[in-house]
Image 1 (cartoon, helix red, strand yellow):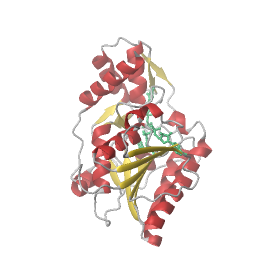
Image 2 (tube, rainbow, N blue to C red):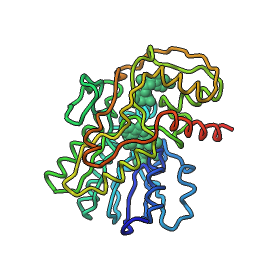
Image 3 (cartoon, helix red, strand yellow):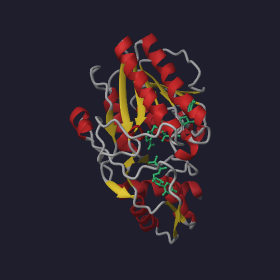
Length: 315
Ligand code: NAD
Ligand code: UDP
């Protein structure tokens, strides 16, 4: 346990990132309330925490108000995979915008610190590379990704207006592609798709020519960044990029996954989804300077741990 026991609300706590965060906060001796509507999250992700008296789970949709007394809030509720956030785009925007209003309302009322899991998607299909926090983005406001991108942008606006208008204690991070155990096998994101396909001996689906790039951060590194950000003084509000600045083309990722799984799947090429960003890589200078943070798990090590998770799950 480090420091004083805090009451912490984690929205989206039964999801991929949320469950790792809850685990970390409980391990540090905090009193954790996980709120989730289980749209993309799973009870299995938090089952191991339920017997801990410092952990509580509540089924609740964050688009509706919630009245709780807490010291800190991590707002992670929102589907994150393009397949899932485009399934019900109106609900996605509501989750980001009304969810932000509701958590900011709690923070304002009880004086809690409130953390927003924003995203590299606020940069859209970027025209500067790598992306630092001063870049204002290139987002299509009417495309199929807009429900997520613009929802998250509006959430950031609300966070900064609550700071200016109500002096709310905000912390905003922009997360770049993160992967690891507890991603949903049908999540639709590239790392889980490729690993599941390789382990099942199915074709690996590359969208476009596979030359679009991403930079992949292992979940443990990211969660360390979250906790460091929450622990900063009140004048550190962000936004701060969190991600692993090692860029790789999607096709290169497929080859790494095949090599690490020992799979023999074929690579097949499918159409590139509309508005799919061509390149993405974080500039993490600010995270290094302000948080003393940088990722330590390299891609092969992180993929190895993720493959082991999916191997056990698929059996
Ligand atoms: P996830 O889909 O596993 O987790 C999201 C969680 O939010 C799920 O448990 C889901 O059931 C819950 N949720 C969705 N709508 C809700 C609602 N209306 N009320 C209550 N709960 C709701 O995805 P994740 O990768 O764990 O992402 C967590 C957060 O981090 C999201 O806000 C996402 O936008 C952000 N993020 C993630 C990544 C990444 O690479 N993993 C990158 C950028 C941003
Ligand atoms: N992608 C792919 N095959 C898949 C899933 C995704 O080639 O089965 C590509 C997708 O088009 C994008 C990249 O991989 O260029 C990352 O996609 P993901 O959905 O993981 O996250 P994004 O960064 O696009 O939000």
